[in-house]
Image 1 (tube, rainbow, N blue to C red):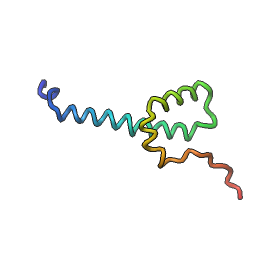
Image 2: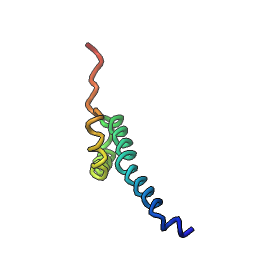
Image 3: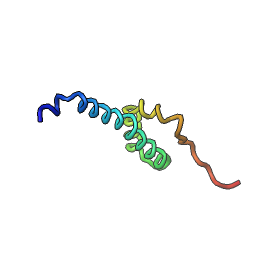
Image 4: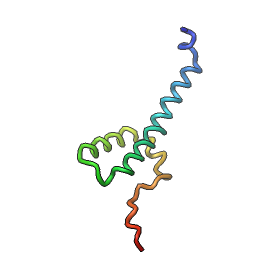
Length: 77
C-alpha cells in the first residue's frame, strides 16, 4: 500500500485532477450559475458569486472568450 503513495504517477494524476477541477469544472459551473441567476439573485448570493469569481478567476479567464453572458433582450422585431 505504501508503494502507491510513493508513486510519482499517482501524484501526477492527483495534481492533474485538482488542476482540472480548479480550471475547468468549477468555472463552467460558475458561468452556468451566473448566466441563469444574474438578474434575479439577491445581495448575499451576488456577494458569494463575486467571491467565487475572485477565487476561480484563472479558470474564468480561460473560458471568457468562448462564453457570452450578455443579456438576450426581447425576441421582438
